[in-house]
Image 1 (tube, rainbow, N blue to C red):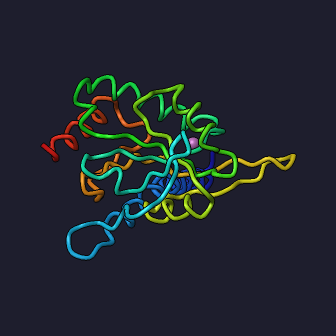
Image 2 (cartoon, protein in one colour):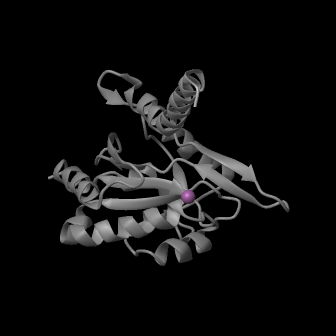
Length: 204
Ligand code: NI
């Protein structure tokens, strides 16, 4: 290989590495922006919402206050990220043992068009009885998506079908419904459980 083509190859690889690194950090930066924009010390993430549980009963943000809670977003047709997250979270809940009763867990649909309360109940219940399934009208779901700065976008598929592209952070909120920390998709189980334990400790 000529010296010049070697330089070109090295340059090209450097550019490719930057592109990959940038793509990977976009998700983090979105969250960082969401969690560092604040007035005073408290990040503005979270807030009022009105949704329905798997039985169609109304659940508001106020219903979750009083105990810390973990909340994350997805949809029942999700091919991999949501089932993985639900599966992992149910394993972490098992690891917490009795401590798990000192906080709450909620999975909110970003696809209210298809995710009826019944469907959410069946789907989330197949992973864990400790995770509260939440959905609502398009407007109600949009409100909670905006409040939690969730990235969620409809992606058309061939044949008129669609899927949802969405962020996969599990937000850990304190007993007042204020952002405390988060768990990233793919986080090591011991780290994730430690974060949940730490959150539970804030309310004792
Ligand atoms: Ni998903």
